[in-house]
Image: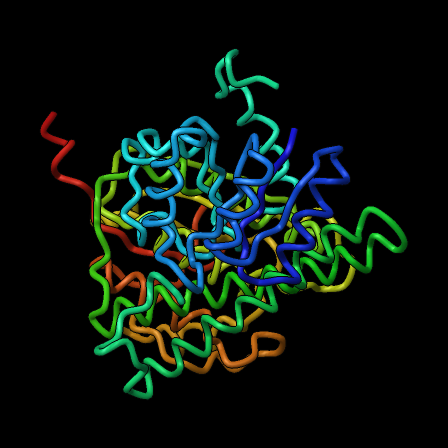
Length: 131
Length: 240
């Protein structure tokens, strides 16, 4: 499994990558929307871990743009954000439409919880998407 | 940068907005400390890292409570009240408090005697109860058998209470609490007792309770005492 971590705080992004690697998951780290697209182009991720508070982009807009690429439409997204879900206006229905596997609020969600969310999001992939 | 930050023209223009912006920024290093400590606890002195992680989590919880209070008080956000059963809220708070309670030699219990819905904002109730619990979870030596009970019950006079109670001595003297909460149940800033600091948690909890039409009260229930939120019951589902 390969994960793309999109996180503007470099220390935290690197830590998330290490945490995933300790669970035998390979991961790339992207600090903003532009580099996220670059990494996804080079190496299509199986899951994306996304902080919605991006420095160069509205996180929801990035999500919509990510979904507009035909290759990435079925990639599960685990949101790991400091922004509460209610403040993003991302209700359960819209989350499902956007392929959000889980919405984790950072202050109360441990790395272990994030790992579990990433690992359990993979069954959302269809058989045709399996590598 | 922050999607939930509202200000005119995108700039922080008033003292309260500057303070809120500062407080939001504080979350970043604290988050990193908490997660790094969690990651590092797998090697070396795990108890030391566990303490670091817990301290950072307590600070993050206090920051979130302040931000929610500030947004509500400064009119930036209306708390969306909806009918919710208190049981699920109490269990979630118990889960969040468990590491802190263990650290302070408390065992957590949840008791839901009142099961009908109340009109609340879930995040606000969770934040307020966590604030009250921080006041009560003060260590008193290594005495075992201390219980922290999260309870939902109805008092005479139809008062619906979500409470944090203890069978140990709470981290404040009764007379200090009565002075702090006041004759009309309004909280004041200073709970002058050892280990409670400025009592800011009490002020935050009361502010959140006010935003939901309620207040903080000093309570006694089932031979335990503590602090509770008076909440408004939902009439809507009572008609179903």
